[in-house]
Length: 239
Image (cartoon, rainbow, N blue to C red; front, side, top):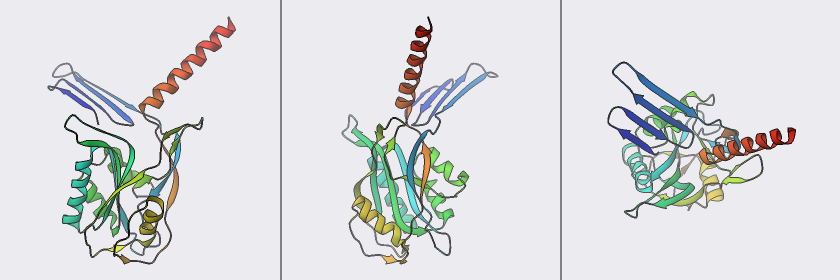
């Protein structure tokens, strides 16, 4: 997330859906501006909840925006070492690039098909570098679950704004946790995850939902200019 801090008087941050600006003019006068993009793009996502599980357990999800791939891997290893998370799949959910040092950064998802309590998931995610909105929405979302996109983002005009996530790698680690068979099979068939030995629960259903997401600032600005141009043309036609 791009962030600019100039002393204690100016702070600016931007992520894919939120823009924040803070100005401290004096000891008593502070200005704060928050812009949030409307989630107007329909897509499909996967819920973390293991459907049919008698204890309402979840698979461990992670959503990273504009993050170093090395940081994503380190978060996964932390969950494996400290919480016996087991194998974790890393997906690329958008374009990636390399900084001046040659390190890769971009948008990534992580999915661990082993079972955790919802409290464990939130505890682990709170200690990672996942996107702020991803951490917050899960506890406020009426499903009480994390969600990750599995389909492309497509505009109302049919333009593909962002392709569906693709498989990057499997970070393997042994575990004693039970594995959600439905999630395991989905990761194999949809993303090409390699096989690994696991203690399967034998269940075959997943929870997939339609939901709204944002198209990002570039799309929001483009749409704004299109509407402005259409308004100008309409006014010119009147005269």
